[in-house]
Length: 338
Image (cartoon, rainbow, N blue to C red; front, side):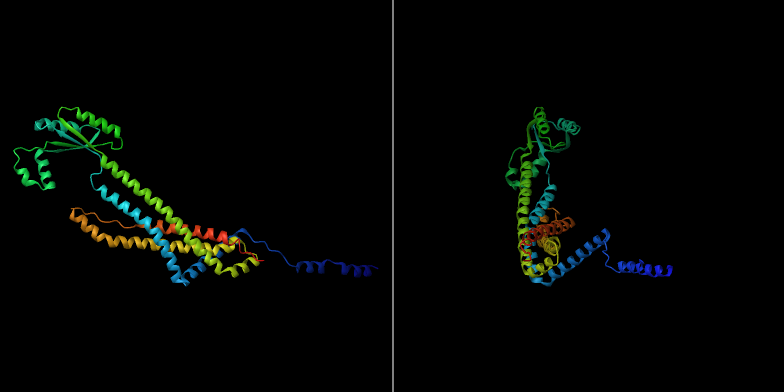
């Protein structure tokens, strides 16, 4: 009986069932690290493929990048010109100046004492005395009328004190200083040379605003160029996109190669824009140096440095990326498998 029961129980043992369950399919879970590595690998692969596609059609890619470069080089050249203009003006006397014309009968000792007193004034940074003889010699050299001035019985020019205010940003303090100088007994006339400095500042601000407006307008042009180029890329790969979406590819997955293509167009366009600026500077530096040396100046034209290099390439790459994203987001929704 026990032998019979043992034979009956043996088929009911769990050994075969365990082997059967262990031989079934097992669902594996992908960790965050694996998914992150797969995302990085796909980005690396797509970036390499996009660069290869960009270089595979050099003529078409170069034409598009050149259009982007010209659009970027125009506002960058204007900004570079303004920077060189400000650097050139900085070498001149660009600060407001007060000219104090003294009475002609003022004695030299009294004038020297007055100048010493002004040099001790904390509101005045610098005092320069120009004698009547120095003023006449400077006028002869500037006007070229030396022969006519020889016939004069006396020097008609007075002595002048040139004052440079310390606080040039406060017009009220400068006006108060001018009024105090006018009340002095030695002062015949006081002139504040401030108008041309204000005009120069306003002209520079106008140029900066024009540069910013032109940059915004041409940046929009760059985006439109990239949008149209990426749209053509999407249409040429319509069948490939349909296959990817049929096997479960998302819009983000399909969009990724076109984003890298826009990045390539923008980056190469920015590089070409920097090369155009550098070429223009090399072309103009010789004549400008010759012109400045004729005026006794050692001014040289400054070229686009590393800031322009990184700014143009980085800004153009971002514009290309934005244009590609706009084009891909709009046109990929219209491509769906039926």
